[in-house]
Image 1 (tube, rainbow, N blue to C red):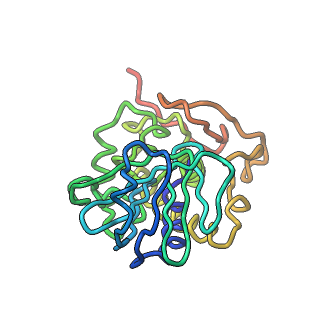
Image 2 (cartoon, helix red, strand yellow):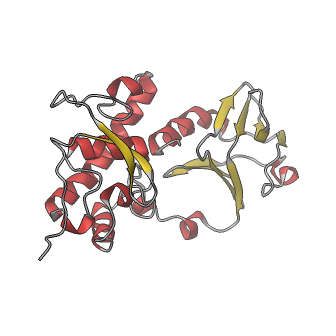
Length: 248
């Protein structure tokens, strides 16, 4: 599933169409009226976490690539088209994704202060929200898009490794100073990840995600499904500390 940095990179690629008119809209997205899109001028492109937003004068189209979504700019893929937009100088096409129409003001729909790649991101607010989830595993909590929008499974694995925190640690048992460092690391790594995507070197920089050996201890990494979401975690039993509540 694409993460926040990938959506920002897509925004950078698609901004060539801002200010242009939609000449043709097509695809099988049920909740997007193609006839309403045609003739509309794309005024802006925004991202929120893992969501991509085409903004028009009176509405927006939200696209979420889900687990297997793909997109193509100025080309087409051999699969069912979910949403395709043709502009004056090119086209952008989306596949295997969720699309929906938003007619409210985006500020009523999205809390930009929770987006780790937004200039409005509020780390104090993220820390406060984590404190309300003491009984959750940290591997679940940092994937919560209402707390750290844009953080996905790759970033989750890497930041927990960097901060040497075991993914099955309980939020309430992790010292506040470590939680704050973890939040800061989510932001830092997200922007590093964006740079790697631009360079085409992202996979070369992963330390533990989808790897087999701990680069600190040179022992086999553990791999398992953690948390209620049962997302894949890669971790080192030796250097990543397991924080659990004291048992009386």
